Length: 404
Image (cartoon, rainbow, N blue to C red; front, side, top):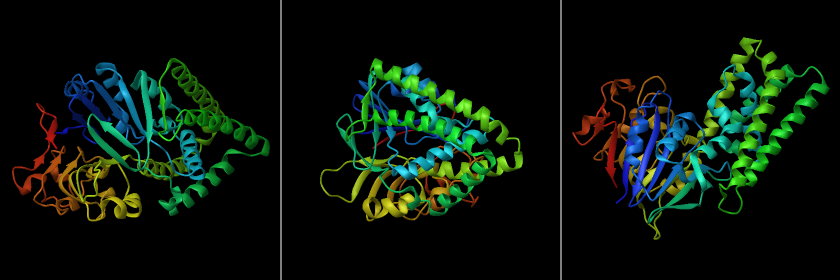
């Protein structure tokens, strides 16, 4: 039996999967202050023979508390990350968006910093010496004790295929920023030289993920290398920020406009890298026990996942994409007996009322949100289909335990 604990992180996510002596903590973060949950999560993890962490994608409401869990519970034996397998040209564009956002923020954004340099430092904090780091992509498999999981996403596709209009907007904004930044060809060359150094550092990091499995072991040499690479990137970025970011931010109106546009595109693109996985079945079947979706986006589901993995498939439990919000709901999601919604507050996005109609209506809904009145249609509630449906956790037990 697979045991699942869904923790109330308000607008955030942390889900623990346990099978016999092994444990997998899928995400651990929140937009709110949820430090009180560190003890709760640590107690539920217990003392597994093997502890794995998975960061489904690079957003702080999914990674914010891994460091504290590692300090209290012990570092992970293995860390799973998404393999940013978008083709090289488009991945460089994502890097450039993060770089521009770094200049545009006065107080640096955690998600931007994570992509540019922090993930190297965090890997050392999260994973025990001798442990492993593996970047997952479509077709990979990993084990949770005697249960095998298969990865459905991310895959190697052009990012433009997912966000056609956004890529055009990005190119225009980047051109405008470059015009604003550089008054001479000499300045532009200096900037490009430093940018190239950053790309070379990141290339060294990606080269650590050797072989088909995109994995490496955290030995003393690798730990030292990751710390050095992170420090080098941070120094270069601080130098660039002083020279280009500070003057760029003087025009507050332009800065705010560019930042808001790029931020929305950047966060959507990061969501599009989410690890999506399910339990692996050796024989062809249309029924599965579990589907975990991270914050995967509508274009990914509709274009890449529906025909291959969702069409005429039935899942016993589905973790709803992006906390069950209306922004990421699509009718191309598969049938599911039971829905898991990790949305705990109305300051970000409403829960999609479409989940009240999503098959199977006889199934249960596990929703960590105790304020159903935030839903667009205020007359709907997770508990309306009977006592078996769960609407909100309580202070004494801020999680749901589910046996799958």
